[in-house]
Image (cartoon, rainbow, N blue to C red; front, side):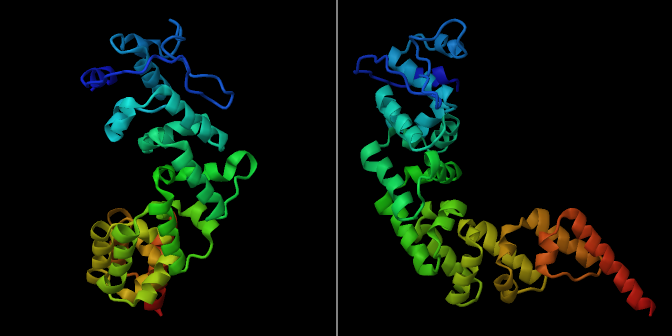
Length: 315
């Protein structure tokens, strides 16, 4: 549905007077155009002309978000409170994030993935998240907030999570498992910090232990070596891939204990095709060698193994 049609079809009482205060744009601090500053030559004039029936304040909000790269219709569907948010409140969020090192070009990704951030409280929500990054994770802002920006751009959901209810409990759980380097966790696997302990991480660890048939200690060792395991689905990843390993490849628990990265490869595009190619050639390859190699390297390995078998048979 066109953005103007989507918005016009909703009931939007606007009680607050129009504000001429625009949302700040790039690091140059140049204000984004509003409905009062756009001219016929402005890039967003076309959009402005298609929103004639909306109050000026609403137009400014839509235009500002669209110029940041945020689909307003989608953002509103995911965050209905955006309907009543004033341009001033959004301006405060944008200004704060830029003061913490985010670039204007980052905002489309951040707000697009997590529109709830647009209506977050700077004081009670966003400031505590940045304090968590510095104090709990030991990640200093560094020059112009570069370190914090790196984490947030990689995982915008961090800004949408409560420190008390999500981020700190997840960090404590991961530390209990044995994740010692909080900074490395923040830079390389920040998605784990926004994953629910009760609904996501604990059940997956339990499946690796009881579902596959290893000790909890072994399961913990696997996730410490391959944290990405916490991001995979039990039904769509662990079960079918382990089932193929056992049923088709003749493998078992010891194989995934030795090579937990097995679960990171696609069953349809990598595991099954390469296993079938090796089996058809009568070649047996260790899992790491078979899966980690590029297509060219894999073909070379097969050719060498085939030549080696021919040489042995000729002796």
